[in-house]
Amino acid sequence: MRILFLVNDVTSPPGVLLEEARRQGADCDVKTIHYGYGDPSSPLDDVPTAMDGHDALVIMGGPMGVYEAARYPFIERTRALIRDFHAGAKPVMGVCLGAQLVASAFGADVRRMDEDEFGFLPQSWLPAAAGDALLHDAEPGLGLMQWHQDTFDLPEGAAWLSTRESCRHQSFRLGRRTYAFQFHLELTRATLDRWLSERARQQGVPPEAVAEKIGPIDALLTPQQTFARRVMRRWMELAG
Image (cartoon, rainbow, N blue to C red; front, side, top):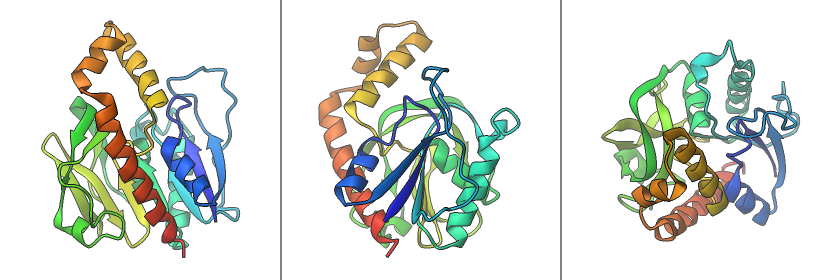
């Protein structure tokens, strides 16, 4: 199995999703599309114009908004590629910005929220999740890492999988194989430490102050990673 990963921020790599894919024997093609919060001199790749023999597509997060397509030309190219994989009945997974790109690719609106979501925040799984191939046994109230200030509407025909009061549309499935997850399934401790530093810089406070607001990081990160690895394995099985 050959999986294409599109990275839209060098400080938001595919993390445990990439680790689990490789553990399961997948050939992983990782392309860094934008530097995001990272070093502007980072070497970058182009979004492929075709599926090029890939069996599945994962689109990661980034600080830009899908409504900024004029500023970030890769956004429209990514939306086109998402539609190609979906039409080819090949699994698609969008994470954070990736989820917003999936929603937008199929005509749904994406917009700014009044406030951002940050931290390990509990999911409320909806009835459609109970029969979902990836989420049917998801732990009630599972805390999953969030860092975003945009939200999306659901595309027509989507199965709504989870919600939160402050951000209603957290995840959905389109057809059998295309998924959008607002939360950061990929998270590793190294990535989180970089995010804590970046958020602290933005807020003008020490990283320790941001970490204290999150809570016991190891106790929160371990169940998230267990969940993320399980989701990744099941998603890969959708490729047949």
